[in-house]
Structures are given as C-alpha cells and as structure tokens.
Image 1: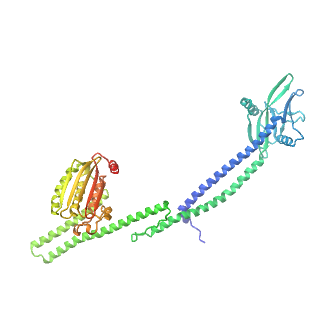
Image 2: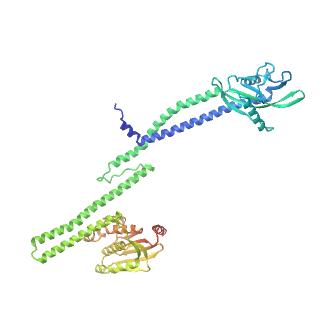
Image 3: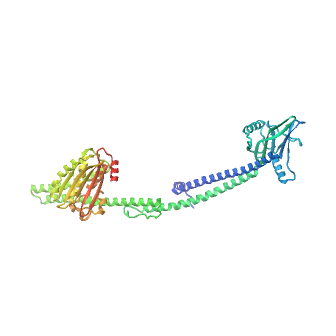
Amino acid sequence: MKLPGRRDLRRLSRGLRFRLTASYALFFAILLIAIAGLFRERLASALQSQVDDTLNDEWAAVKGGFLRIDWDNDTQKYWADWYNDPDDPDEQTLALDIQKVFMITDRYGHVIQDFKTKEDQIRGFDELPADSPAIIQSRVSDALAAFKPGQPGKAFRVTRRSSKGEPFRLRAGIIYAQIERPGVTAHEPFYVVLGTSYSNYAKILRDNSLVYLSVIPSALLLGSLLGWFMAGRALNPVREVAQTAQRISGSNLSLRIPSRQAGDELDYLILTFNRMIERLEASFQQMKQFSTDVSHELRTPITAIRGQLEVALFTAKTTEQYREAMFNALTDIDRLSQIVRALLLLSQAESGQVVLQKSRLDLRELVKDLAEQYQIPAEAAGVRLSAEAISPSYVEGDRVQIERMITNLLSNAIKFTPEGGQVRISARACEGYAELVIEDTGRGIPSEHVPHIFDRFYRVPGSGTAPAPEQGLGLGLSFVAWIVKAHKGTIEVDSTAGRGTRFTIKLPAAGVGSDTLELTRQSA
C-alpha cells in the first residue's frame, strides 16, 4: 500500500472538501466545548445553591434557638451551649450536622468557650484555615453597618479547601444574643460560621466533567466524518459541472450542462455558465462568419485585380488598354483599402484607442447639411429624402463620429428602400436629451434578426437585404452602436418586414449627464 506523499497531503489540505470539513469540525468543537462549559457552570451553580440552601436552613435553626450564648460572671467569659430536643430525631440530626463544622466568636474575633466542656467552640476547623481576628472584626463592622430591622442580616459565603484538599462551603454572619451582666442587659452581636463538606458535590461535578471530556472527542470525530461525507455529497454536483466543462471545446460549444432543477446556488451557477457558453458559441459563429466574409470580400477584388493584370499582360496592345486595366485594378485596390480601414477603425474604436473630440453641436444644422448631401444619391435611387428639424438640438459630441453615425443610417435607409419609397430624418430637443429619428418605407428587418443587427459582421440573410454586391461586411451598424455608446446615448430599432424601419437615437443634451438621460428614458 502506497502512503500519500507530502505533495498529496498538501493538495488534500488545500481542497475545498477538506477546508469545509475543517471549518465544520472547528465550529462543532467550539459548540461542544461551549455547551459543556455552560452545562458545567449551570451544574456547579445548582450544586452550590443546594449547599447554600442547606446552610441557610441550618442558620435558621441556629437563630431559632438551637444555640444559646450567655455570660459567666465567675469566669468573666462568654459560654455557649446547644438546646435541642434529644427525643426528636430530626432536631438531633440537625444539631449534629451543624456541629460538624462550626465556629463562634465575639465581635472582636475571640473564640467563645463552652461552659460545660471548657472546649473552644471550634468544631471541624482543625484542617481549615480560620479567619484572623482582624478579618472577623471587619466583617462584623460590615454586617452592623448593613443591618436593617426586619431584614436578614448580611451573609458571607466562601469555599475553602482543607489541608487534605477536601472542599468546604462556609456561611458566616452575625447572630444577636441577649447577655445579662450584673446590672446590665444588652443585645450583643456574635460572629458565627457554619460549614459543610462540598466533596460529594465536587465529585458529581468532576464526574460529569470527565464524562463530557470523554464524549467530546468521540462526538467531534463522528461529526468530522459526517462533515466529510456531507461536504463530498455537496461538492459532487460541482465536480460534475467541472467534468462537463472540461468536455466543452471550440468544436462542441453546443454542449450544455444539465440543470439539477433544485433552484439553489449551484443551479444559478449552471445557468450562468450555460449562458456564457451561449455567448462564446455566438462569438465563435460570428468570428467564423467574419472569417468567411472577409476571405470572400478580400478574395473577390484580389482575383479581379489578378485577372485584369493577366489579361492586360497577355492581350493588351495599346496604351488605352493598359490604362483601362490599371484603372480597374486601382478601383479594386481602393475597395480593399476601404475594407481594411473599416476593420482597423472599428477595432481601434472598440478597444478605446479612438479619442472623441467633443464640442457643442446643433443636430438641426447637422441634419440639414447631411440631408442636402444625400439628395443626389436618393434621387438616383428613386427615393424621396426629407429632413425635419423644428428647434435647435444641442449635444456635446464628436462632429466626425456623429456625421458617420448619421451617414451610415442614411445610406442604409436609401440602399434598402425600393424605388418610389421615402426616407425621413428628424431632430428635436426634448427635456434632458436630443432625439434623432431616421425612418424609411423600405423592406424592413425580420423580427428575429433585429436583436443582432448591431453585432460586428452581422448581415441579415435572405430577401430582406440588399443584393449581394451591396451587402458589404456588416460593419456600418456596429459603428453606429459604438458611436451612440461612446456618447452615452441610447438607440432603439422598430422594424417590420415589408413596411420599413425606424431608428431612434437619444443623446444627452449639452450640459446634461448620461444618468439624467437614463432616468428620462425609464420614465418615458
């Protein structure tokens, strides 16, 4: 059996499954330790409350008459004795429990002697550290200062360990006794300490803590195994998505990742990934079509140039024949130059290399000038061209690019409008923006092609387009879309096949930002 190497362990520790399991185990460990600590504190508090209740019952018995304190005139000392019914087993048991750990002193910390046995009233304190007289005097002063008639006196509670390590819970306080001296009777305070062993309760607390300490590692191990299993199951769909993604290449972009129909984040990731593949597929198809179109467009004039030159080389005999061949070749070379320039310009524009030279423009004047320039081409095509500009429409724009945008749309409108049709261009000022409309009564664009007409190299196929020689590369509307976007405007298309097309362009008015145009467009 081959053991995993350091590299394999490092790869495992960096895996998402391992990190998820480690995070789950860490959280589970903190939770178990917190629960164990909370339970231990609650148990310790409950046990301590139980011990304190027992001491309170004993204290009430002491104050109720079990203990009697008086003054001996002969010895000039205090004496104390216990008074309980020897025939009552409950009182006898309570008295014996109280006397197991018991101490009584006067207010100055002097231990009171028993009158009968002549023994100090200190029981069970031989192995416990006793308070010094100074501490006793301080506590008596605090209790006297806090004393209020009709209320329990101040109690002092503390936990101590004997010399053997046995824990004891002590309750100290003030008890008043009526002391009779020759000619004087007074209520005097005495410092009394009651105590009981805490060892049984400490053992219960210790045993429970040991149980928790033994259970936590096992629970943590089981929880980690469960976390590893659950993390593996949760990551299985992600692994399947990755395996499917590995099978996707440029030759099979039609492959899609099936949805799990769970409606969770992973389904959203799958949906997003599939949409990305759709966009990539569309881009690949577009580039493929572009390669075909470019090769065709470039091959045609190159072939024509080669043929004309070969004909001239082998058949031309006069200067005029050579001049005609050279003229035709230069015409085709000019066509090649136009194609290359258009591709280069669009590439520079979309990569941000074209810097707009903006100035204040009046669309009304621009529309009138361009409409006059296109009157001759329109008349040659048998199309009636009209311009309408009612009021000044000022925008901040690059004159060259705005003119290119309008001329592209005008030339397309004239080109795709049959003889006898009409092309109309208008400009008007609106609140926050200027609106430019170019519409025709031409062949129109089928609805399924409208969303793609601004894509690079896209040409509407079929009878809805111009004849093949007039189709071009499909770059004109791509230029239009870029120019509108560069000027932070919007463009909308409304077209019906066989009835015509309407382009509506909205550009921010001079001094107005694109945000205002967007708000105006949304509220319209």
